[in-house]
Image 1 (cartoon, rainbow, N blue to C red):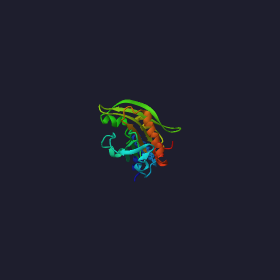
Image 2 (image 1 turned 135 degrees about the vertical axis):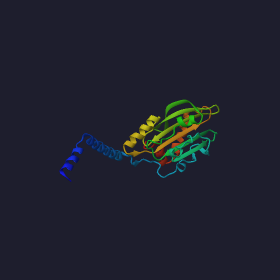
Image 3 (image 1 turned 30 degrees about the horizontal axis):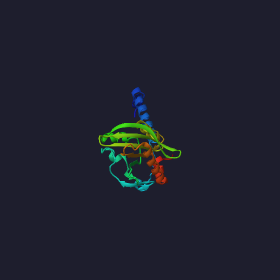
Image 4 (image 1 turned 90 degrees about the vertical axis):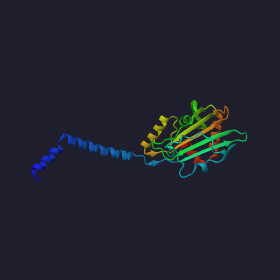
Length: 235
């Protein structure tokens, strides 16, 4: 290589455009490395390899399992198979003939892309109008109240009262915005949280939120330690 060629190469390297391209390339490498380092890697999964249908008994308190149909379910769309890894739907009845419907939906990982389906979405999609939406706290045990929502959904033929809560890792978001923020915060820490939705409802006339809460307490008392952690995390 001649001295003239060396000087020409050095001159091109000193050009502003070339220096700018080098800086941009270095910045991209740093950004890629940072993104890789911050990628969530720690899985938070309270359920493990267990099955919800075996952890939730068919009898607890005054309640006994009577059916697995009749519940309002999320819309059948292209995300249906990704929303939940396990879905439990049961109707329980007591000796007096009162019935309660239970839905427990579980997803092993929440990465901010696919998230739990809330009743505010699936009920209107099934033709219901929501006449009441109120913040609530379900008293599952002494000194244990879970942030939740109370909803009344109606059609011309049916009125359903609902309480539900969602757990994303260690958070209990009541709204979509809170839900996305909960996933983001845990992903930012390197955690991939699991996701849970628990929905209890009844179509009995004027059943009342107190009766829904009572069923939730019986459920919590009737399951074992592992399912309690699935229901409320580390609370």
